[in-house]
Image 1: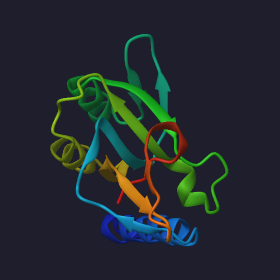
Image 2: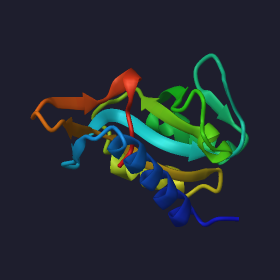
Image 3: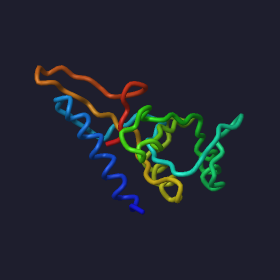
Length: 141
């Protein structure tokens, strides 16, 4: 079994390689989308009427504590089975310190890694700018 730190490093390298393959210059200044995490979750979960129920009851309580309201799969057609369990977690309160929330989730075995949903800015050779956010390409960095 791969350790959590190595797993996160491999994922981040993959994201960098995919984005770089589009011949874009990438910059990252530490900003993230308020109220969102990118996480790899091992273990099942279901959406109940007012919360998400995880296989781990401790993770269920943590989701309730921080107001987890939505889980979306990042990769619809993952290139590797490990990427099939990477999700964007959205929380009710946008003002949460997402770095602290990420660390709290990573304390549980069923969360392989978690990071705030960092904004990655792209700049083409012509100086055009863009932003990977929201539905069309949010990525952790």
